[in-house]
Image (cartoon, rainbow, N blue to C red; front, top):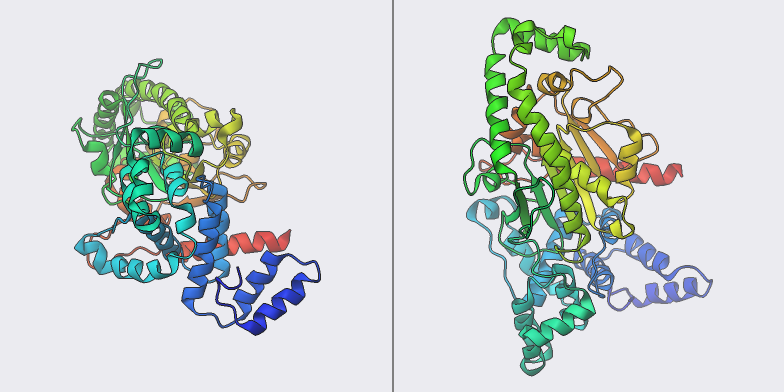
Length: 482
């Protein structure tokens, strides 16, 4: 390990002396890396070595990924650099060279960075070429693995990897769970669910994939779900869940109509006062608005019930490891956030629920803010759970107007769970003036909570580093306090 990190001889001898005193070898190696004047490539080599060693069995547990990200923060390796190391490792094994658009290249110049990092990634790669990638990608990259393996272990030995017999052997060894998420479609109807299809948003492979879930749509086009998340840029491998499009389109039209109806100054003023006062009793709402309440109540109730069932179905997909043995991050707004919430709640009831979900982003979630339930779902999430809310979201308050004053909606206020540090609340009131804005301003909202998106101009207003530093500071403070 010391040789792989290019530690000087003197430091090597110091390390040996420390280990002789029955101290942890990993602690001593981290201390040497922190205190010595090693260059950036040596830090990259350390991270790469740990990443390769962690995922060597073909299982990339999300909890290990969170630990590696924390280690990167301690070693002053940026989050972007860590993800580049992940991507470069995939590229090295498969022989696939990722190409970005001109717009992306202008912002991060990622292609040049990947070429530089690949020089350090080669350390320890050859030993895990087969099971490592196939195990974590659920067999999606089987043909490409054969190409990459041929360059390392020889064409004759690699030829069997691409065959059906070879895939069967690798499947039994490394737990390949089918064809992955691309084109996943519910084979038979489950309960009231009529549509459940997972569609790709981006082309590429990564050790960490993303699944985005929409809350409603405005039409029923073939690519309408993908279009909503077109600016998402969290991974080279991103998917959207296409579900119950007929009902979500009806809901979208109902929300648009109700928003247009409430645009008059008198009604709008009353609604804002109601939202800010926190009143949810029916008597607090204007009679004119209550007279058209059925326009939103009926489609909303239908979609709420279906969202819960879709969430349970999504839980089965994730528990079956259809995406492979690697971390997945879930992002959703409005009813999409409700789908994810019910997915996580369903997963908590299963023994095999751990190590799957990396991070969760819920925006305008029409779910309870009960700390008990949020603590439950946080137990199975390796990283952070982001709750984006808007205090003045009058539409959510109107829909739940019959609930008691004590009932708190996560989409309209912070989730207070003192015993859980994973939950991060973001007040989006400066961006969101109504529930419709979660769709219309989705890119800006994602930026505000620290989710990477493609820039809409030459220079993005994205400030991920600021959010990352804040989260890392919270982690360090938490460990210091304990």
